[in-house]
Image (tube, rainbow, N blue to C red; front, side):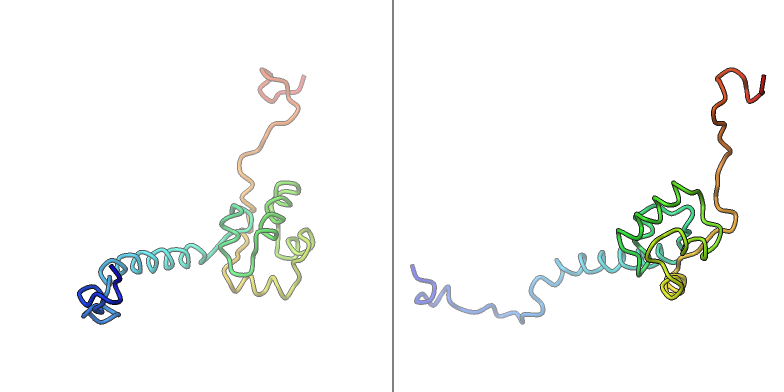
Length: 131
């Protein structure tokens, strides 16, 4: 049976186009809008010294390569003391770009978030005492 020749199957849908499946897509739109607002709120303030790579990528203007370079340099050289220190240690971050990133929500904790002190090259059982 050809649907173009059979009049019972070739009739157009009487409902207007904009109402077809509106209920089905309304939930998806609401969910997407809610997730979008959450991403904007999460990107409000991101600390350079404590953020993960994915958190850094949430800042407008920071791509995957820049975020990876920031995290790698932070692991190698410790926390950043200032934005000038960040610009000197991470390639591709200049003064103008840092101003834009700061306006987008990139912050720097002055304390550095160093965390607890680590004992290095001390034999177990000595409890930090030198012999």
